[in-house]
Image (cartoon, rainbow, N blue to C red):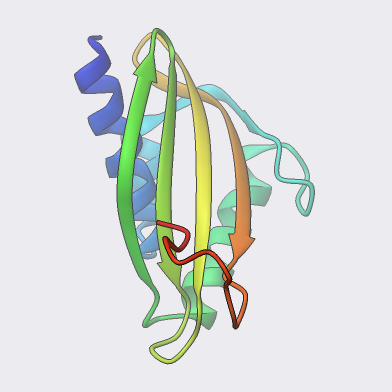
Length: 125
C-alpha cells in the first residue's frame, strides 16, 4: 500500500473507534496478530476493544479531530485533538500505527491533557 492509503486507513480506523464503531474498525483495518502498547490494558486486541467501547459509552459526545497524519513506510503517525465532553478541555493524542500487509499490526498511543492555563500562546494544536 502507498503512504497515502496507509494514512487513510489509520485515520479511518481511529475515527471509527472514536465514534464507537470499534468492531467494524478492527474488522476493516486490524491484522490477525494486532497488538498495542497502551499501559492500561493487556496487549491483545480484545482488551483494547473493550476499553474503546467503554470509552465511547462514557463519552458519547466526544469530538475527535485529526490534525495531521504522517506516513513513513509501514509506520503512520496521527496527531489528533479529542474533547471528551462539550465543555471539557482538549486532549492532544498521538497514535503510531505499524502496518503489515496493509493491516494494522501494532499501535502506540500517547495523550496530553490541555492545562487550564497555558503560557504558550500557540496552544497545543
